[in-house]
Amino acid sequence: MRMAFLAAIYGLVAGIIAAIVLWLMGLVSGLVWSGPDAGWYIFLMITAGGALIAALRHIHDGEDLAAQITEMRDPKAKARKATLIMAAMAIVAVGFGGAIGPEAGILAVVETLSILIGYRLAHSNAEARMLAESGVAGALGGLYGSPPAGAAIAQEHPEAPRWQLYLAALTGLFGFLFTTNHLLPEASLRISLPEYAPIQNGSDILFSVVPALLGAAAGLAFVILLPALKAFLNGLGNTVVQTMVGTLIFAALASTWPILRFSGHHELEAMLEWGSQSGMAALLGLSLLKALALALCLAAGWRGGAAFPLLFIGAAAGGAVLWVMPDLPPTPALVAGMVAALSAGMGKPLAAVLIAFLILGGAAVGPLCVGAGIGWAASRLVPKAEMH
Image 1 (cartoon, one colour):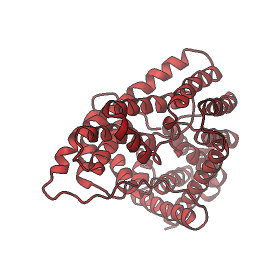
Image 2: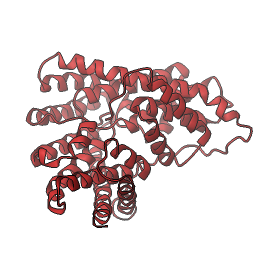
Image 3: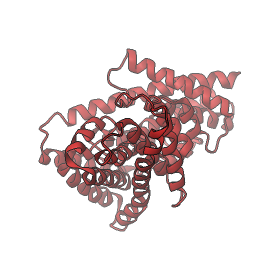
């Protein structure tokens, strides 16, 4: 009962922290992008963000998201200074327009909290690791709006009982929602889709196969591009050189196509409007460019997660079908493409379904399952994807 109580409280605190860090990222983003919406300004701001990240990486290189979660199980092994540097890197990465999600910065702050209080509350190293896992579940359960997804990601190599992680994820969601609804404005990550009434004859499930195949292909493009870009940048020299070269390439792409900035989950409507005028090939190209931008940012040390950008990547790929199938309602195509890209890109179909189901509001359950199945099958074609 003691550990259950601690897990619930720690999950609640982690959910509140997730909302606060997300809000801080929004503040930084608002300040950075208050200037003109011009190509030269976009290039300048992204380059400035890359310079800050390069300087922070020179002090402490840090890890990707999967390594962060692993390290949080042994918070004594990490210095307080290092985790704060990682939090700063992630906030800069999101605020300066990186094509990444906010997960890394949020977990870095929760990791710092684990170092500060984990070994004071816990009676053993095992209990400390359980609390750290509860923090992961609470933070991600709140961020994704899905306690099952947060628990599923936290329990890959669990020490805490599964029910304890679900409890922490549930209280994390409560803390996140309470904070975003009552204390901090505009910190929600819920994605709005066009209204949709399922077709009773099941034809929407059949029509969703092609969008799902395209979304899965785009997710695989990210999985293939990331290690290739990491190897390319690693061969250029130290972390400062790697970060700046990757940043300059990303800045050139984003100044040409500004929609490549940010995670993309708030820009689906703009993407659809642009796609309705530009055509199927343009939307498929946008999907691949976003996959390239995401892989480039992560390879260059812009700390973040891949889940939300993968949703945009899949939406662009799945939405391309609407150009040649105008009678198809947009929501099934978007949902099938998004979930397929997320499943293929994360290599975790169960977590992808749980994330997508609640972030998307449970829209188009049939196409969602089709996307998950095709994305899972596609993920089996390549080595297991890294989680970011």
